[in-house]
Image (cartoon, rainbow, N blue to C red; front, side, top):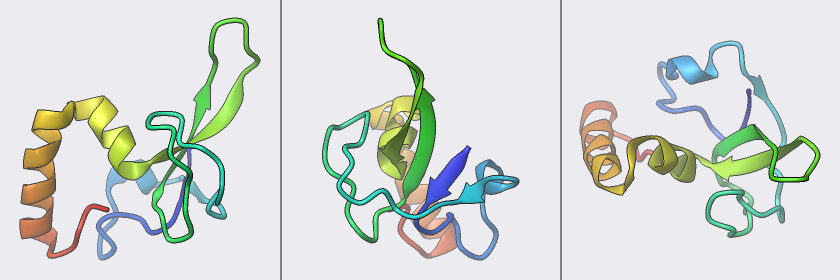
Length: 92
C-alpha cells in the first residue's frame, strides 16, 4: 500500500508504513471515504477500490478516514487521545 504525507508517528512509524511507498499527495482528488478533496499537507493512503460494475482503481483515503473505517468513530476518539498523549503529536 502506498501512503502520502508524513508517516505516523514520525519518530517510529507504525507497521502499516513498513514496506509502503511514499507517493506525492494526490491534491484535488476526492477521498473515497468522506468525499472531501485531498489538500496539500494532508496525510493518507492510496487504497485499491472496486465498486459495483467499476474497474479496480487506486483511490486516496485521508489517514483519519482510513482509521475511522477500521475502528469506528467512537474508538477512533480513544485512539487519537492515546496517540497524542503517547507520541506527543497529532494523528492528523
